[in-house]
Picture (tube, rainbow, N blue to C red):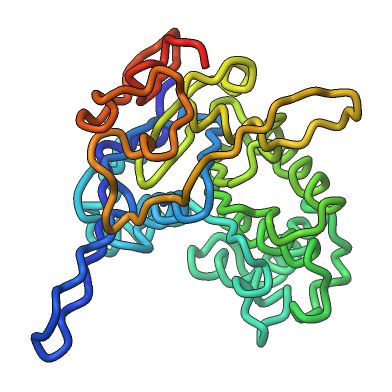
Length: 328
């Protein structure tokens, strides 16, 4: 499949704090994203997963140019997003939309649902007048909400309803790519499944492409086509979802999967508890960034000195581990 989105060697470093009155050592910068590359094909769902602070959201914000990149390239349908001038970028934004993690914080409390859903189509001149109101009603029905809620304010809605409004707002300008930044992590478990099913249905109905960001591998198991795992600003494994869940090739992915609850009281799955804490992205370790916590029995001096490249370890599979072919 032809990639709709191509990300090449994406880097985002935040500068360190300056010394106060010139006294004391200056703080080193933070390497939030450190050389990330991947593709997302048309109609595909690529899940970008990893624990909090690994750089997932920063990747999303840089792709959409909500945050400037330090270096790298982002190509959307062949267009270099990071090099586009203001006007072409404004037109391109209609084709790339985002669903934020916090539905309460992403909606303007002074806007009714109707006003929020009218805003995008009005800016991009997709509809006007009675057509615009009819469009709002269709959007609400499409995401499973009663069109009568159009006159409500965000505080009058439940968390699940607010997130559905956020999805409807993203769909209002007819995008091709939807970036979902942990769209269910702030919702009750019972509501999470409903929103995930909705996103799956919208993908089939509208032919959408998703970059789906999550920290929970269980959330994306049944909807992602491929999974990319991040650790400390780098990709450590990329694989088709079914193969990654069946046989992970990176020890960090293995540890993440071991933490996924199994709904079987007789299951004997071994939980892998990683030692220590995640290193600071301001002072990443030398060599493999995961080596201080790695439980791999083959861990060697090479891991402490030589950073592993993200390399092919099977058809469509990439892993950044010197011992990716060795069993855990």
